[in-house]
Image: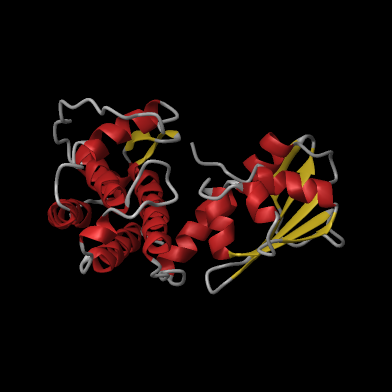
Length: 270
């Protein structure tokens, strides 16, 4: 994708999220989601707060009272922006979301290639602005899916944004296998993610490092099969791995113990 096609994806996920929330009533805004401590409204508040921060707007002077669900400094910063908006109606947060994203889109549409080349702070360290935008697209899609599961309105599991999200999760799998699981050299792992935006890919260990393979190993040490929802919920830490393993949502062929270890360590989100 070129930079403006990436901006297209940012706009697409924002508009999808906006359309999802446009007819919510009070009971839906307060629905708990898979993010501990966060309601549907909190999910949207998180996106609003993140984009306000990127616009350079001042942070609210606010101290959340309940932070028992917060795990790290990044979560604490997010919680300030979320809790600050809990006194508002969901419809008011949606209006702010529409206003903030329109302003952000105007800025992104006016940016040049050199603007996208500039380095900035991202959740994974210093990187070009285009990488930050790629992360923001993925983050927005993940939180949109949190809301969709909470209110029982599945969708946006196909198309350019969903494929982008799949790309981001696949990129993290060498870290999962090589750094978190650390199987022996020669191990080949195949993960089959079904769905329109899913794919089949492989990770192999060599020299105590894991990397994505251009083709599938025959035979692999272990093969995992699941749908995109399951893969995303495990990779983003939304579902408890052991609970999922006790269902029929995942099929493991080959080294069962290794397969279960990969599932248990699939979460790469901070």
